[in-house]
Image (cartoon, rainbow, N blue to C red; front, side, top):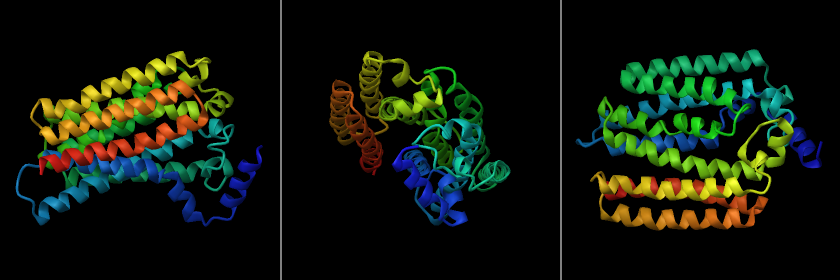
Length: 301
C-alpha cells in the first residue's frame, strides 16, 4: 500500500460516521446531475415563472438527487472487492469498513424508493419513470459490464445523459425531440471525459481487473481515436439546439468556441498521454459542460 493510501485511510478512520454516508453519495458527481436536471427543466419550461413552477423545479432536483445518490451507493456495493484493489477507491466507506453492506443496501434502497415516489407525487409520472430507468440501467446494466467490456462506457453514458431529460419532463409533463437534443450533448460529453479519467487511473484499473480501453490499449492509439472522434461528435451535438431553433445565434457561436477549445484540449491530452494531461482534460471537461449548458439558458432568456 502506498504512503498516500495509508494517509487517506488514516484520515478516513477518524471521520465521523455521517461523513461516510456523505462520501457514499459522490457529491461531486451528484452535483453535475443536479446542474443537468436544472438546465433541462429551465430549457423545457416556456410559461410564466411562478412560485409553483420554482417549487416543482426544486422537487424535480430533490427527487432526482435521491435516485442519483442511491445509484452511486449501490454501485459501490457491487464493486467493493474491486475498490479494495485500487489506490483511488480503497478509502471509500465499504473497503475501509466504515459502513457495512447492509447499511449501504438500506441507504440505497430507501433513497431510490423515496426518490421515485417523491417524483411521482410531487412532479409527474414521466419524471419518476425516467429516474427509475436511470437507476436500473446504471446499477444493473452498466456496473456489471464494467467488468467485462470497454464498451461499458457507451452503455453507462445512457443513464448519465438522462438527468436533463428528467428535468425537461419535470417542467413539461412529457418528452419531446428537444429533450433528446440535451440527452445527445451530455451523452457525447461523457465519452472523452471518462476516457481521460480511465487513462489517469489506468494502473489502478488494471490492478482491479477492469478491461477499460485505457488498460487494453497499451500504446494509446484507440484511446486517441476515441477522444478525438467523440469530441467532434460533441461539437456537432452541441450545435443541434441552435440548428433546430431551441436556442439562438449566441449559443451557437459559444458552442463552437467551447467545442473547438474542448477538442484542442483532447488533442493535447492524447498527444502527451500522460497522467497530468489526462487530469487536465478531466478538469476542462468539468468546466466545459456547465458553461455550455449555462450558455444555452442565457441564450434562451
